[in-house]
Length: 385
Image (cartoon, rainbow, N blue to C red; front, side, top):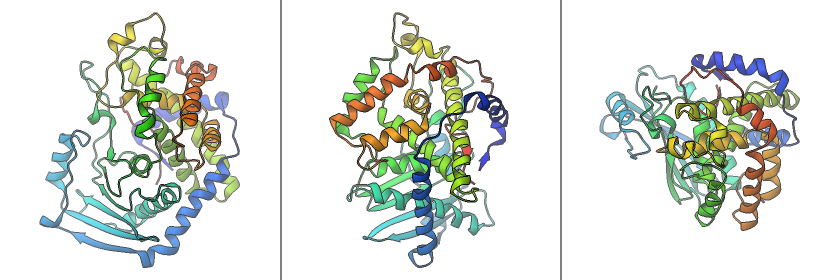
Protein backbone atom coordinates (compact mmCIF):
# COMPACT_ATOMS: atom_id res chain seq x y z
CA UNK A 1 0.00 0.00 0.00
CA UNK A 2 1.66 3.19 -1.21
CA UNK A 3 0.93 6.85 -1.98
CA UNK A 4 2.91 8.80 -4.58
CA UNK A 5 5.27 11.37 -3.06
CA UNK A 6 3.61 14.22 -4.95
CA UNK A 7 0.32 13.46 -3.15
CA UNK A 8 1.65 13.14 0.43
CA UNK A 9 0.35 16.61 1.38
CA UNK A 10 -3.08 15.66 0.06
CA UNK A 11 -3.03 12.49 2.15
CA UNK A 12 -2.06 14.48 5.26
CA UNK A 13 -5.04 16.78 4.70
CA UNK A 14 -7.37 13.79 4.33
CA UNK A 15 -5.99 12.13 7.46
CA UNK A 16 -6.68 15.27 9.48
CA UNK A 17 -10.33 15.04 8.41
CA UNK A 18 -10.92 11.31 8.87
CA UNK A 19 -11.75 11.30 12.63
CA UNK A 20 -14.68 13.61 11.88
CA UNK A 21 -15.73 11.73 8.76
CA UNK A 22 -15.39 8.02 9.47
CA UNK A 23 -17.94 6.08 7.45
CA UNK A 24 -20.04 3.26 8.82
CA UNK A 25 -18.78 -0.09 7.59
CA UNK A 26 -21.10 -2.63 6.03
CA UNK A 27 -21.23 -6.40 5.58
CA UNK A 28 -19.58 -6.58 2.17
CA UNK A 29 -15.91 -6.21 3.09
CA UNK A 30 -15.70 -9.88 4.09
CA UNK A 31 -17.24 -10.89 0.77
CA UNK A 32 -14.64 -8.82 -1.06
CA UNK A 33 -11.87 -10.35 1.06
CA UNK A 34 -12.93 -13.87 0.13
CA UNK A 35 -13.34 -12.96 -3.54
CA UNK A 36 -9.87 -11.45 -3.93
CA UNK A 37 -8.28 -14.17 -1.82
CA UNK A 38 -9.75 -16.75 -4.18
CA UNK A 39 -8.26 -14.95 -7.19
CA UNK A 40 -4.80 -14.73 -5.63
CA UNK A 41 -5.02 -18.36 -4.54
CA UNK A 42 -5.92 -19.41 -8.09
CA UNK A 43 -2.75 -17.78 -9.43
CA UNK A 44 -0.57 -19.27 -6.69
CA UNK A 45 -1.84 -22.77 -7.44
CA UNK A 46 -1.75 -22.61 -11.25
CA UNK A 47 0.99 -20.25 -12.45
CA UNK A 48 3.75 -22.86 -12.55
CA UNK A 49 1.90 -25.00 -15.09
CA UNK A 50 -0.33 -22.44 -16.82
CA UNK A 51 2.04 -19.52 -17.57
CA UNK A 52 4.62 -19.20 -20.33
CA UNK A 53 7.10 -16.31 -20.68
CA UNK A 54 8.84 -15.25 -23.88
CA UNK A 55 10.96 -12.17 -24.63
CA UNK A 56 10.40 -10.01 -27.71
CA UNK A 57 13.04 -7.68 -29.16
CA UNK A 58 13.64 -5.70 -32.34
CA UNK A 59 11.01 -6.09 -35.04
CA UNK A 60 9.07 -8.58 -32.91
CA UNK A 61 8.05 -5.88 -30.41
CA UNK A 62 4.33 -5.13 -30.72
CA UNK A 63 3.40 -1.46 -30.58
CA UNK A 64 -0.33 -0.79 -30.41
CA UNK A 65 -1.89 2.51 -31.44
CA UNK A 66 -5.42 3.54 -30.53
CA UNK A 67 -6.08 7.19 -31.22
CA UNK A 68 -7.44 9.28 -29.61
CA UNK A 69 -7.45 7.23 -26.42
CA UNK A 70 -3.69 6.58 -26.57
CA UNK A 71 -2.33 10.17 -26.70
CA UNK A 72 0.15 10.74 -29.51
CA UNK A 73 2.77 12.32 -27.23
CA UNK A 74 2.86 9.19 -25.06
CA UNK A 75 2.83 6.90 -28.10
CA UNK A 76 5.86 8.63 -29.57
CA UNK A 77 7.73 8.46 -26.27
CA UNK A 78 7.04 4.73 -25.96
CA UNK A 79 8.09 4.06 -29.57
CA UNK A 80 11.32 5.94 -29.01
CA UNK A 81 12.29 4.19 -25.77
CA UNK A 82 10.87 0.67 -25.86
CA UNK A 83 13.63 -1.91 -26.32
CA UNK A 84 12.08 -5.17 -25.14
CA UNK A 85 8.77 -6.84 -24.33
CA UNK A 86 8.02 -9.53 -21.79
CA UNK A 87 5.23 -11.66 -23.26
CA UNK A 88 3.32 -13.78 -20.75
CA UNK A 89 0.68 -16.27 -21.91
CA UNK A 90 -1.69 -17.65 -19.29
CA UNK A 91 -4.03 -20.56 -19.99
CA UNK A 92 -7.30 -20.68 -18.06
CA UNK A 93 -9.82 -23.51 -17.77
CA UNK A 94 -12.42 -23.53 -20.54
CA UNK A 95 -9.92 -22.69 -23.28
CA UNK A 96 -9.63 -19.05 -22.25
CA UNK A 97 -6.28 -17.32 -22.73
CA UNK A 98 -4.86 -14.04 -21.42
CA UNK A 99 -1.69 -12.67 -23.02
CA UNK A 100 0.17 -9.84 -21.30
CA UNK A 101 2.84 -7.72 -23.01
CA UNK A 102 5.03 -5.56 -20.75
CA UNK A 103 6.89 -2.91 -22.72
CA UNK A 104 10.32 -2.26 -21.17
CA UNK A 105 11.60 1.26 -21.77
CA UNK A 106 14.16 2.45 -19.23
CA UNK A 107 14.79 -0.89 -17.58
CA UNK A 108 17.86 -2.57 -19.07
CA UNK A 109 18.40 -4.99 -16.17
CA UNK A 110 15.08 -6.82 -15.93
CA UNK A 111 13.64 -7.47 -12.48
CA UNK A 112 11.64 -10.57 -13.37
CA UNK A 113 10.21 -10.91 -9.86
CA UNK A 114 8.59 -7.49 -10.25
CA UNK A 115 6.74 -8.66 -13.37
CA UNK A 116 5.79 -12.00 -11.83
CA UNK A 117 4.26 -10.03 -8.94
CA UNK A 118 2.36 -7.85 -11.41
CA UNK A 119 1.15 -10.96 -13.21
CA UNK A 120 -0.20 -12.27 -9.91
CA UNK A 121 -2.42 -9.18 -9.65
CA UNK A 122 -3.39 -9.29 -13.32
CA UNK A 123 -4.31 -12.97 -13.43
CA UNK A 124 -6.08 -12.98 -10.08
CA UNK A 125 -8.42 -10.20 -11.24
CA UNK A 126 -8.92 -11.82 -14.67
CA UNK A 127 -9.91 -15.04 -12.89
CA UNK A 128 -12.47 -13.17 -10.78
CA UNK A 129 -13.86 -11.42 -13.87
CA UNK A 130 -14.32 -14.74 -15.65
CA UNK A 131 -16.48 -15.96 -12.77
CA UNK A 132 -18.91 -13.06 -13.25
CA UNK A 133 -18.70 -12.52 -17.02
CA UNK A 134 -20.81 -13.66 -19.94
CA UNK A 135 -19.22 -16.71 -21.55
CA UNK A 136 -18.60 -14.94 -24.86
CA UNK A 137 -16.66 -12.02 -23.34
CA UNK A 138 -12.87 -11.93 -23.79
CA UNK A 139 -12.23 -15.60 -24.43
CA UNK A 140 -8.83 -14.53 -25.75
CA UNK A 141 -7.58 -11.30 -24.27
CA UNK A 142 -4.37 -9.42 -25.07
CA UNK A 143 -3.18 -6.79 -22.59
CA UNK A 144 -0.49 -4.30 -23.59
CA UNK A 145 1.18 -2.37 -20.78
CA UNK A 146 3.44 0.53 -21.78
CA UNK A 147 4.10 1.88 -18.30
CA UNK A 148 5.31 5.37 -19.15
CA UNK A 149 6.14 8.06 -16.58
CA UNK A 150 3.53 10.49 -17.96
CA UNK A 151 1.19 11.71 -15.21
CA UNK A 152 -2.43 12.80 -15.41
CA UNK A 153 -2.29 16.53 -14.67
CA UNK A 154 -4.18 19.78 -15.19
CA UNK A 155 -2.99 21.89 -18.14
CA UNK A 156 -1.12 25.08 -17.34
CA UNK A 157 -3.52 27.10 -19.47
CA UNK A 158 -7.21 27.12 -18.56
CA UNK A 159 -8.10 27.64 -22.20
CA UNK A 160 -7.18 23.99 -22.79
CA UNK A 161 -10.15 21.63 -22.49
CA UNK A 162 -9.54 18.55 -20.35
CA UNK A 163 -9.19 15.48 -22.56
CA UNK A 164 -7.53 12.11 -22.99
CA UNK A 165 -3.97 13.30 -22.31
CA UNK A 166 -5.13 14.71 -18.94
CA UNK A 167 -7.46 12.02 -17.62
CA UNK A 168 -7.19 8.71 -19.52
CA UNK A 169 -4.75 5.85 -18.93
CA UNK A 170 -6.19 2.91 -20.86
CA UNK A 171 -8.60 1.71 -23.51
CA UNK A 172 -10.48 -1.49 -24.30
CA UNK A 173 -13.66 -2.66 -26.01
CA UNK A 174 -16.76 -4.11 -24.38
CA UNK A 175 -17.29 -7.87 -24.35
CA UNK A 176 -15.55 -8.91 -27.58
CA UNK A 177 -14.71 -12.59 -28.00
CA UNK A 178 -11.15 -11.60 -28.92
CA UNK A 179 -10.30 -8.46 -27.01
CA UNK A 180 -7.44 -6.06 -26.38
CA UNK A 181 -6.62 -3.68 -23.55
CA UNK A 182 -3.95 -0.97 -23.69
CA UNK A 183 -2.58 0.73 -20.55
CA UNK A 184 0.00 3.45 -21.12
CA UNK A 185 0.91 5.01 -17.77
CA UNK A 186 2.68 3.64 -14.70
CA UNK A 187 0.50 5.88 -12.54
CA UNK A 188 -2.36 3.89 -10.96
CA UNK A 189 -1.94 1.18 -13.60
CA UNK A 190 -3.63 -1.56 -11.56
CA UNK A 191 -6.73 0.49 -10.75
CA UNK A 192 -7.00 1.25 -14.48
CA UNK A 193 -6.55 -2.43 -15.30
CA UNK A 194 -9.45 -3.28 -12.97
CA UNK A 195 -11.56 -0.61 -14.68
CA UNK A 196 -10.78 -1.73 -18.23
CA UNK A 197 -11.33 -5.41 -17.48
CA UNK A 198 -14.78 -4.62 -16.10
CA UNK A 199 -15.60 -3.09 -19.48
CA UNK A 200 -13.98 -5.96 -21.36
CA UNK A 201 -15.97 -8.60 -19.48
CA UNK A 202 -19.28 -6.76 -19.84
CA UNK A 203 -19.78 -5.62 -16.24
CA UNK A 204 -20.96 -2.15 -17.27
CA UNK A 205 -24.24 -0.78 -18.62
CA UNK A 206 -25.03 -2.21 -22.05
CA UNK A 207 -25.67 -0.20 -25.22
CA UNK A 208 -29.39 -0.93 -24.83
CA UNK A 209 -29.72 1.21 -21.70
CA UNK A 210 -26.83 3.71 -21.85
CA UNK A 211 -28.75 6.50 -23.56
CA UNK A 212 -31.79 6.00 -21.33
CA UNK A 213 -29.93 6.48 -18.07
CA UNK A 214 -27.66 9.23 -19.44
CA UNK A 215 -30.66 11.30 -20.57
CA UNK A 216 -32.22 10.97 -17.14
CA UNK A 217 -29.11 11.95 -15.17
CA UNK A 218 -28.35 14.87 -17.50
CA UNK A 219 -31.48 16.57 -16.16
CA UNK A 220 -29.81 16.87 -12.74
CA UNK A 221 -26.82 18.92 -13.89
CA UNK A 222 -26.58 22.23 -15.70
CA UNK A 223 -23.70 21.26 -18.02
CA UNK A 224 -23.00 19.84 -21.45
CA UNK A 225 -21.51 16.37 -21.00
CA UNK A 226 -21.85 12.92 -22.53
CA UNK A 227 -22.69 11.83 -18.94
CA UNK A 228 -21.60 8.22 -19.39
CA UNK A 229 -23.00 6.55 -16.30
CA UNK A 230 -21.33 3.26 -17.24
CA UNK A 231 -17.94 4.95 -16.73
CA UNK A 232 -18.88 6.14 -13.24
CA UNK A 233 -20.23 2.69 -12.33
CA UNK A 234 -17.04 0.91 -13.43
CA UNK A 235 -14.73 3.56 -11.98
CA UNK A 236 -16.42 3.36 -8.58
CA UNK A 237 -15.95 -0.40 -8.47
CA UNK A 238 -12.34 -0.03 -9.67
CA UNK A 239 -11.49 2.31 -6.77
CA UNK A 240 -13.17 0.00 -4.26
CA UNK A 241 -11.46 -3.13 -5.56
CA UNK A 242 -8.08 -1.39 -5.86
CA UNK A 243 -8.44 -0.40 -2.21
CA UNK A 244 -9.32 -3.98 -1.30
CA UNK A 245 -6.21 -5.35 -3.05
CA UNK A 246 -4.06 -2.70 -1.33
CA UNK A 247 -5.51 -3.71 2.03
CA UNK A 248 -5.27 -7.46 1.57
CA UNK A 249 -1.59 -7.31 0.61
CA UNK A 250 -0.64 -5.97 4.07
CA UNK A 251 -3.40 -7.48 6.22
CA UNK A 252 -2.46 -10.27 8.63
CA UNK A 253 -5.93 -11.83 8.53
CA UNK A 254 -9.54 -11.07 7.60
CA UNK A 255 -10.18 -9.02 10.73
CA UNK A 256 -7.12 -6.89 10.02
CA UNK A 257 -8.28 -6.52 6.41
CA UNK A 258 -11.64 -5.12 7.52
CA UNK A 259 -9.92 -2.35 9.50
CA UNK A 260 -7.48 -1.51 6.71
CA UNK A 261 -10.18 -1.57 4.06
CA UNK A 262 -12.41 0.74 6.09
CA UNK A 263 -9.51 3.20 6.39
CA UNK A 264 -8.70 2.88 2.68
CA UNK A 265 -12.29 3.57 1.67
CA UNK A 266 -12.41 6.68 3.83
CA UNK A 267 -9.22 7.97 2.21
CA UNK A 268 -10.53 7.28 -1.30
CA UNK A 269 -13.92 8.76 -0.47
CA UNK A 270 -12.44 12.11 0.53
CA UNK A 271 -9.83 12.04 -2.23
CA UNK A 272 -12.66 11.63 -4.76
CA UNK A 273 -14.23 14.82 -3.42
CA UNK A 274 -10.93 16.71 -3.64
CA UNK A 275 -10.38 15.63 -7.24
CA UNK A 276 -13.95 16.54 -8.19
CA UNK A 277 -13.42 20.00 -6.68
CA UNK A 278 -10.15 20.32 -8.58
CA UNK A 279 -11.66 19.51 -11.98
CA UNK A 280 -14.57 21.89 -11.48
CA UNK A 281 -12.28 24.58 -10.08
CA UNK A 282 -10.13 24.37 -13.21
CA UNK A 283 -13.21 25.63 -15.07
CA UNK A 284 -13.92 28.29 -12.41
CA UNK A 285 -16.86 26.29 -11.09
CA UNK A 286 -17.97 24.77 -7.80
CA UNK A 287 -20.39 21.89 -7.36
CA UNK A 288 -23.33 24.16 -6.54
CA UNK A 289 -22.89 25.75 -9.98
CA UNK A 290 -23.51 22.46 -11.79
CA UNK A 291 -26.59 21.33 -9.89
CA UNK A 292 -29.50 22.13 -12.15
CA UNK A 293 -31.32 25.32 -11.23
CA UNK A 294 -31.64 28.87 -12.46
CA UNK A 295 -27.88 29.47 -12.62
CA UNK A 296 -26.63 28.93 -16.21
CA UNK A 297 -22.97 29.74 -15.54
CA UNK A 298 -21.95 26.07 -15.56
CA UNK A 299 -23.59 25.49 -18.93
CA UNK A 300 -21.30 28.15 -20.39
CA UNK A 301 -18.06 27.28 -18.55
CA UNK A 302 -18.07 23.48 -18.34
CA UNK A 303 -16.36 21.62 -21.18
CA UNK A 304 -14.72 18.23 -21.67
CA UNK A 305 -13.15 16.11 -24.40
CA UNK A 306 -13.30 12.87 -22.45
CA UNK A 307 -15.58 11.42 -19.77
CA UNK A 308 -14.36 13.95 -17.20
CA UNK A 309 -17.63 14.54 -15.37
CA UNK A 310 -18.30 10.80 -15.08
CA UNK A 311 -14.76 9.98 -13.89
CA UNK A 312 -14.51 12.72 -11.29
CA UNK A 313 -17.90 14.11 -10.23
CA UNK A 314 -20.36 11.24 -10.73
CA UNK A 315 -17.85 8.79 -9.25
CA UNK A 316 -17.34 11.08 -6.24
CA UNK A 317 -21.10 10.92 -5.66
CA UNK A 318 -21.08 7.10 -5.78
CA UNK A 319 -17.91 6.93 -3.65
CA UNK A 320 -19.53 9.00 -0.90
CA UNK A 321 -20.53 5.74 0.80
CA UNK A 322 -18.69 2.76 -0.73
CA UNK A 323 -20.30 0.22 1.60
CA UNK A 324 -23.82 1.34 0.70
CA UNK A 325 -22.85 1.23 -2.98
CA UNK A 326 -21.63 -2.37 -2.63
CA UNK A 327 -24.82 -3.30 -0.80
CA UNK A 328 -26.92 -1.56 -3.47
CA UNK A 329 -25.16 -3.53 -6.23
CA UNK A 330 -25.70 -6.74 -4.28
CA UNK A 331 -29.41 -5.99 -4.23
CA UNK A 332 -30.02 -4.99 -7.86
CA UNK A 333 -27.49 -7.27 -9.61
CA UNK A 334 -27.73 -11.04 -9.85
CA UNK A 335 -23.94 -11.13 -10.35
CA UNK A 336 -22.99 -8.45 -7.75
CA UNK A 337 -20.16 -6.74 -9.71
CA UNK A 338 -21.83 -7.10 -13.12
CA UNK A 339 -24.58 -4.58 -13.75
CA UNK A 340 -27.92 -6.32 -14.25
CA UNK A 341 -28.96 -4.85 -17.59
CA UNK A 342 -32.69 -4.64 -17.04
CA UNK A 343 -34.95 -1.58 -17.00
CA UNK A 344 -35.62 -2.22 -13.32
CA UNK A 345 -31.90 -2.04 -12.47
CA UNK A 346 -31.48 1.08 -14.64
CA UNK A 347 -34.33 2.85 -12.83
CA UNK A 348 -32.89 1.86 -9.46
CA UNK A 349 -29.45 3.22 -10.37
CA UNK A 350 -31.06 6.43 -11.62
CA UNK A 351 -32.83 6.83 -8.29
CA UNK A 352 -29.65 6.01 -6.36
CA UNK A 353 -27.82 8.86 -8.14
CA UNK A 354 -30.80 11.21 -7.74
CA UNK A 355 -30.66 10.70 -4.00
CA UNK A 356 -26.86 10.71 -3.79
CA UNK A 357 -26.11 13.89 -5.72
CA UNK A 358 -27.77 16.01 -3.01
CA UNK A 359 -26.97 13.76 -0.05
CA UNK A 360 -26.25 16.05 2.94
CA UNK A 361 -22.93 14.37 3.80
CA UNK A 362 -21.76 14.65 0.19
CA UNK A 363 -22.80 18.30 -0.04
CA UNK A 364 -20.97 19.03 3.22
CA UNK A 365 -17.73 17.56 1.88
CA UNK A 366 -17.91 18.95 -1.65
CA UNK A 367 -18.46 22.45 -0.20
CA UNK A 368 -15.38 22.31 2.05
CA UNK A 369 -12.24 24.28 1.29
CA UNK A 370 -9.50 21.77 0.48
CA UNK A 371 -6.00 22.65 -0.67
CA UNK A 372 -6.08 22.20 -4.45
CA UNK A 373 -2.54 23.35 -5.28
CA UNK A 374 -1.55 19.85 -6.41
CA UNK A 375 -2.39 19.76 -10.13
CA UNK A 376 -2.41 15.98 -10.36
CA UNK A 377 -5.52 14.28 -11.75
CA UNK A 378 -5.08 10.68 -10.68
CA UNK A 379 -8.41 9.17 -9.64
CA UNK A 380 -7.33 6.88 -6.79
CA UNK A 381 -4.83 7.88 -4.12
CA UNK A 382 -3.59 4.49 -2.94
CA UNK A 383 -1.37 2.26 -5.09
CA UNK A 384 -1.10 -1.50 -4.80
CA UNK A 385 2.57 -2.37 -4.25
